Length: 284
Image (tube, rainbow, N blue to C red; front, side, top):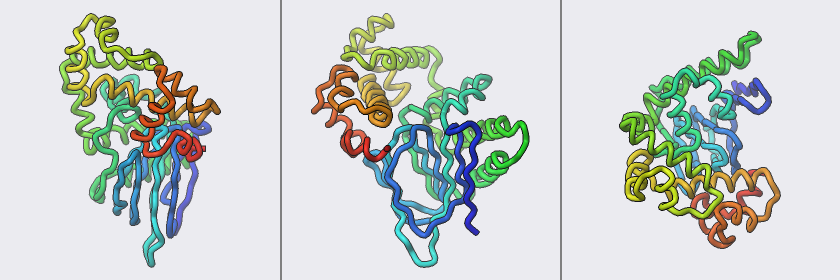
């Protein structure tokens, strides 16, 4: 039986499409929030940011905000595409994470960090399906504490992902506190200055560190260089501007560190696999 339910708490903050079933599916889009796709059965492929994964039964895909992806499931005899889509505003979850700083740090990695993996096949023995059923029941319920119940279940979901799937990201918590503090300050500086031309010496001087130490500690903590992080930050901002404004591509490039239009387009296509104009058409 095909069970399709759209559950909403605050408008747009949490949308659960539970156990939807189709004979085929072709989607090319991105979301402003996070999307988690759990596939009970199906065959085809998923494309995300220049990477392609085969769709398998009992697999999970994690999409970060504004991450363009395409799901292609061709029709097959006696073969359905059954999945649950969970799409949510990250801020909906953040409000429940204040008492759990380690879990909040992990969630912020899932939100905007560099993920080693986003596709996880063959999870039939993984207890995710039962948790999605609980989320569905809670979101469907008429209880006055429905939002709180959903929020607490989302914490359980994050803990499950941290413990069993995103282990490399969770290992970041084992980094010595001093190095982690430096890394967090470097990321904060880059987030605050991504609209300006980047100079490693300026970043290092502001934190009273050497350029070598800045690069070394950040790479060890995050798996990427400050320049790589800055590029990802600028791409993320470009996606938001392309999705939510009508600014010309040249103006967006100029706002992101004074980049030339040609260099920005080259950088964007390398990261996303499509041009800025193609991305804008897809998300709208």
